[in-house]
Length: 197
Image (cartoon, rainbow, N blue to C red; front, top):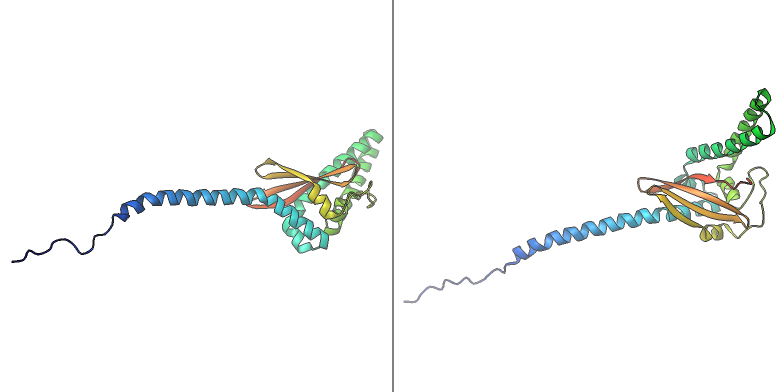
């Protein structure tokens, strides 16, 4: 009599155990890649915003500019800067009293009008090209095209949600652009004006 062959025809390799050891490493690698991608996206965000801002300003595209500029916040910040300068000039020229208060009120109205006309694609373009807020004319020798000014600037993170980028619209003036992050998007929220502006 013949003995029955008890060896199985197919022996499955012991891969399930090897796969179980591999999954945690794959999961860790996936998490690391995703984290690096998010960090890269966050770090490149201000530069992508500046590039988009430059392009929108160059062609005067208002709808694209809305993606890169927080207009209400920018207007408020510019009004605060200019009102502080106007009040300093008024206080230096006039003693405190009724006349000083009247001059401060008039200056505030002028500042509001100036800011409303400045915070447009054309107005931002003129400011970046080195124009004075008062005359609208360049202050000093222009230092290249709009693209050259943006490309020659320098920036740094002041905080995880604040990026500062400085350009030289003319040879003797600097203009500082402040970008603020909300979520993963960056927008222009302030422009630190040169002292002469």
